Image (cartoon, rainbow, N blue to C red; front, side, top):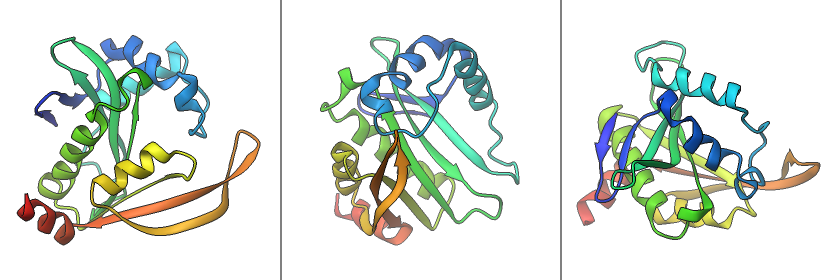
Length: 184
């Protein structure tokens, strides 16, 4: 995938993205909502190398993370991605992480909309889901801006940094996405 939106370039990750990638993936504001061990230079580079060569045609599936770049700055400001299960693929689960310096400017919405277009038109998925910790209000609002419907609220479902947290799940069907697209 290599897509230009109005303000962004969404493309495959590359090892050369390491410093920008670490800048947003190790930021404390982002780590607050993620149940992952923070990336190091070594683990970040290994991740970027895997993403650069991720095989969409593989029967194994997996996470496809895409760089979100500001072309006029030549800087990667975030990542959008989709988890694709094993073949045959009928659904996927999307997510995003952006550097806090770029929050509130509509970049995540623009990139996630492009990702949904790819999921429904390029991959021909029937259903796309997303979810997050309920205290991550920015992601909750983003899923709603994308036209996703809330399907579940899970009480104390994830242990995150020593505290049980609630999560919400959202979904969008191909036909719902198509209806939104036809309204625009």
